[in-house]
Image (cartoon, rainbow, N blue to C red):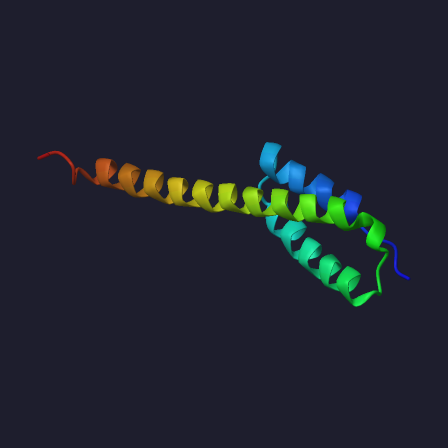
Length: 90
């Protein structure tokens, strides 16, 4: 039986919320893969709860990453509009 990676997934998930959102998708994908293996009986089921918690943290971190990207795009568009003088008449 393959050992679980619940602790690694949880650490990546927590890091994605607190420090580095790019870790979120990795925690999410690894969590999905490991939960499928646990359900299939090829991975140690003892780490199921830790893996699920890491996956959920990874989902939250991924949402934060997407929001950050959207905000940066808005910031760049507004900055470009101000820089080109497109907003002077408003």
